Image 1 (tube, rainbow, N blue to C red):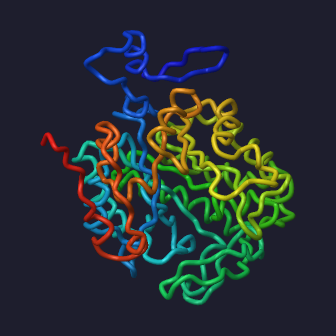
Image 2 (image 1 turned 135 degrees about the horizontal axis):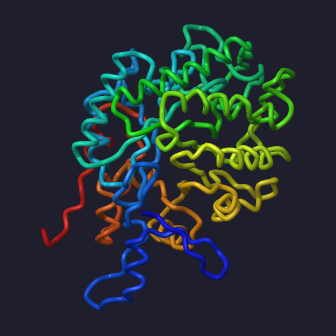
Image 3 (image 1 turned 60 degrees about the vertical axis):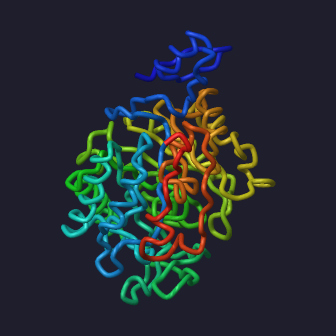
Length: 399
């Protein structure tokens, strides 16, 4: 069980096994226990270590019906050595679909496909949660039979959509009506129920980056004048109505959120409302007793923006005192940084994305100080097993 101690006036969450090791002192015959490799209790899941596989879009689902395949089951099972897998972003509905060759969670066929994945991960001893995704304005008419994507308002985010024919500029979306907002909230709840039926150990609501919930939070993409626009309370209303609908279907200790302030080009450039809005949302999340919060560090240069102080570890230094539950740190993580963040009490778990692509046995490599393999970037967004499920495990010389 995770407990909290106070060192120099700072809260330091540590597992009991890690603290027991520290109290016993160093032993000449054994290396120090890495914080990353200690167990952790997240909600009602007992995780064998604090290494999390971050959600990674890899475009290997069936291109027509968005059903996960046996190849994906093999891929995830190979990476089940971590404490937790957060599965790739998964569309909650046809309306929410917006990235070519990615999976869904709205049909019976998709539920059966995901059951192949979850069964394989569980057989390998791992835990896996589904990430619930609505792309909103990041979709494209080519992915929607020619119809416009939907969003909070009719603002083109000025980004790039990934279609079957390649990357194309986004377009101005159509604003959701009040009734469509209610339908979308129900879609999130149904996708959460489908995730449970598919054997997932929980769900994570994708509320950041460029997608629909973030489009409601952002003053540049949300110009609504109804109860979903204007004030921070109104702009976060959609997020909390989605969360509360999901909590009807899944226990709170199996539900997490991925959310962070961000700075991207065009409509998602950070402004004076960006950080206060996320501060407000994260503070309110404390009231729900959730499984976890996955917090992304900066993915772009924050210099000269209202988010400058959040650069590097600043993101976790800022939000650790605000959020009282299990916090997962993500973006640009290394073994050394992950161990340091946990030991400093700035994170409880650490999510690794790119390192997991070429290193299915990432945890074992951390434990043995084995080198990490390099990613073949030409195969990251592709099809078939090459550069996906064919990365070998590292074989120690003693084996």
